[in-house]
Length: 88
Image 1 (cartoon, rainbow, N blue to C red):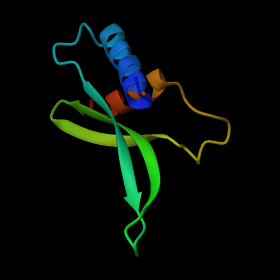
Image 2 (cartoon, one colour; image 1 turned 90 degrees about the horizontal axis):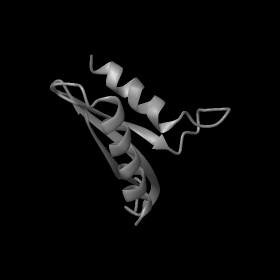
Image 3 (cartoon, rainbow, N blue to C red; image 1 turned 30 degrees about the vertical axis):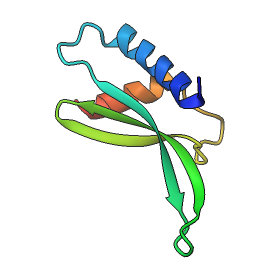
Image 4 (spheres, helix red, strand yellow; image 1 turned 120 degrees about the horizontal axis):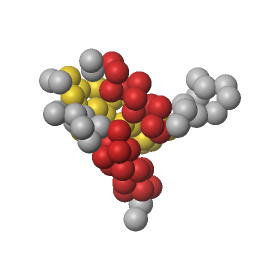
């Protein structure tokens, strides 16, 4: 199992626990963002992103790395809650 499958498994568990009673539960997808350099086209950076689809909206957020956080990372559940609340 690769890192994306591990994170997706945890995301799915959180959805099943927290949003099981929703008529229309959110769909969260973990994926990889490749960024290429402007000249040469080589891959220069990879980021793990989380995408939510809910209530006709879809958007993504970088969950790793997060260089703006000074004191570590939010929990995965908190990131998902933040994203879910933005769709309401």
